[in-house]
Image (tube, rainbow, N blue to C red; front, side):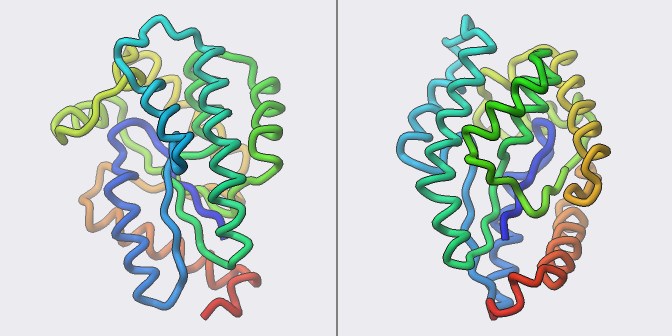
Amino acid sequence: MFITLEGPEGSGKTSQIPELAGWLRDRGYPVYVTREPGGTHIGDQIRKILGNLQNNLMHPRTEILLFLAARAQHVEEVIRPQLKKGTIVLCDRYADSTLAYQGYGHGLDLQMLKKLLAFSTDGLYPDLTLLLDIDVVAGLQRRKQSGGEWNRLDAYAIAFHQRVREGYHMLAEAEPQRWRSIDASQTFEKVQQDLREIVIQEIQNNPRMNDII
């Protein structure tokens, strides 16, 4: 089963995933945790280029092609092989990030992006996508206070991040059968509880998971 976590900057995806993965493993489920951009040696090199604050002249088309290149490698080297083994894959960002950031954020053509995504993913899409939703200003403030990596995309204008958040809302509304939204402004513990309740229900309702444990 392929599960992705999406959301604006500072939504807490990266800190929530290890807790969720550990909880699932304690219940006997095989779990593989990965992220985008990255997840492979090639993808991690591309991630450094994308996040480097010195690359502030990067054109949006260049940005999207780098993301897609990292994703294509990620799918073929990591995600698809893990899914074939019956593993639950938890991925911090995936194809929907491209639509939210490069599509809604930068204003690139969504239909063109969807075609590029179909090519780069070879048609592999998540079974479940969890949207950790948070106010843009609050999320960016949380991001700064965390002391973590502050990258080139974080440094975009507030208006860009607001378009990204609105884009996520539109994506979720368009595919309610795949998306579940969680209020990421809640306490860490409450967000984790919400994630667990949604994920375990979806796993139990997925016939492919019946023989895993």
